[in-house]
Image 1 (tube, rainbow, N blue to C red):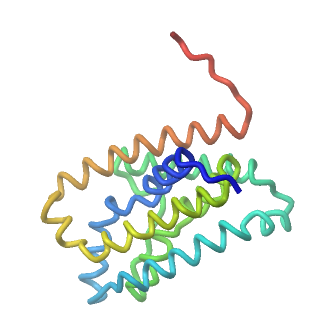
Image 2 (cartoon, rainbow, N blue to C red):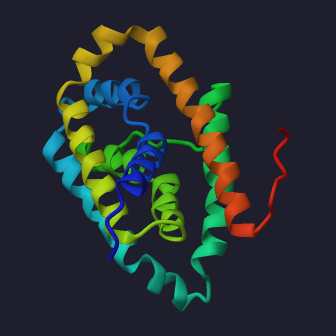
Length: 194
């Protein structure tokens, strides 16, 4: 175990971008209007448990299928790439089903702990120490809880336009992350122009 503040910050930013809780505020508001209420503590707890399961037993689970973390990270880079394109272009590639309980489904899963974020957790394990990912994950869960508590306040502060700009910015960040994950796990080296 090696505690590294740089790794924690890097993992935090990656998870923050992929989970994209600020970009999910309009969706959460819509679900809240349809289901009546969203329970921030319940959503955060369920999301955290899903993430922990994949953080600690994701690799052995992949081993059962004969898949290594690097291969999964490459596959994950494609998913992250598509999510980034969704955010940048404003298109819907992954259909979100909005039926059922508002707290657990679809907010905790798949909105927060969805395919992209779960893949990211496993992909990060190929690059960072587990303890650093865990700390970054806890920090993200705190932010998720606070955002869920203050959803309508954020909507008033940012407005629809502000939320859209935020979504585009995080889309570009995610696109860069997807390319980096792909290059790191394939061994391709780009020669940077000076």
